[in-house]
Length: 305
Image 1: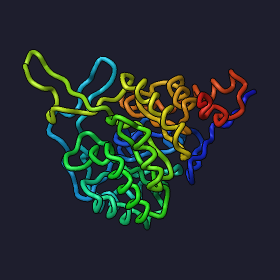
Image 2: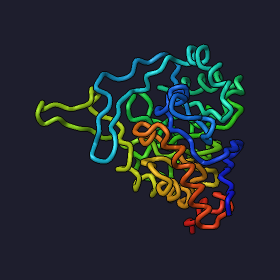
Image 3: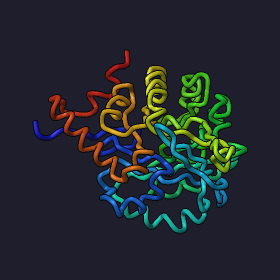
Image 4: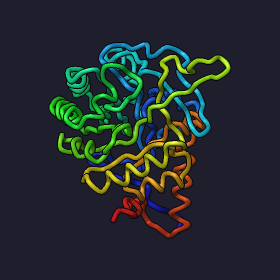
């Protein structure tokens, strides 16, 4: 066997392979083009967009941990109007699905962003961020309450005709209840997980490290948590899942796929090695050839009972 099929389908999204960049780790794609041909990716998720411009949180915003990163960027972005004005032409030139991540401080914010992006077929889908731990007055608040997450999902679906992905927070007691609420709200796809809330302390300065005190923990440290949650959610919902959380290698990606994810997103790995996703794609292909498996789809949810 010398040729295998890495293509996957998630609702209306047809990807040539299951590798997606996680929001906030590749800017708008242009930042990665100096390192590799981004058209080889399955899809690209651009940095989170809000209604108004945001300067983000105070510095320092990022610090390493023994097995990952803590970040408190705080959704720094130019706002929806400038995003459309400046980035639409760049995104339109890409020959791969581009997902736009949106964040809000209120239901009205989410409704407005969905309505504002609705006329643009250049975007393959919206990813609704109800799980960011780094913004006040919204963010993770929506993603930890099943009634609120249902309302956010519903209002985005009412204002956006295309594919809607809802990104779940791991900072909850029962991830399956949140996932069911998202599905009942009409989401087409779930992405999971966002970062875990954490902090770091500098004992020499006797001070907290991050300007925002708390940050989102990503990287290998959270992979077992993310994997467990994908496995749990895959057993209670019928919509596809994009798994993420500490995926650094093809072995990590395969674990998520066997646990029930139809595609995977790479974040921290890209910040360490910009072409990490491409290496994972090549390794996935080699794995299928070595195992004599025709299609990656044969492995999706293989461990679900």
